[in-house]
Length: 106
Image 1 (cartoon, helix red, strand yellow):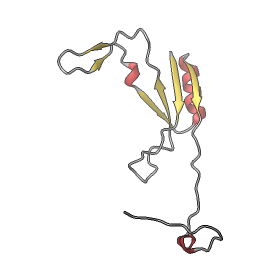
Image 2 (spheres, rainbow, N blue to C red):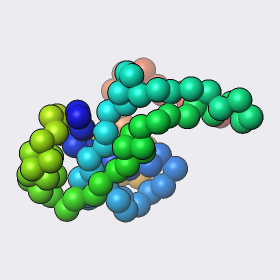
Image 3 (cartoon, helix red, strand yellow):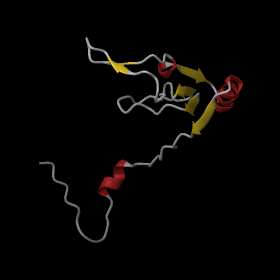
Image 4 (cartoon, one colour):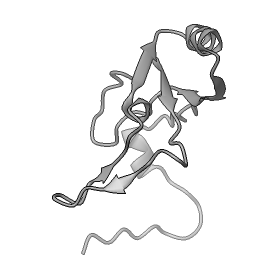
């Protein structure tokens, strides 16, 4: 069974970083997982119950150790570090030689 070890990204709709400090194991979807479309609702159904399972860990090493103990092949997806650009309100009024900036609001 192939699994992915990753840290979830911060949601775009939230400003907090809750649930982004943990590592998760997520199962890859099998090709022969007997998937079918539910005739009543039109949802995709599957006979594979592990594809909806996510396991949380507090460290990457603990997640790797757990995957190795279970005999799963895994790959680690390292998180991308966010670039923090320091902004200052006074930068809006600094003098820059050259062409004048025109900011139109309408």
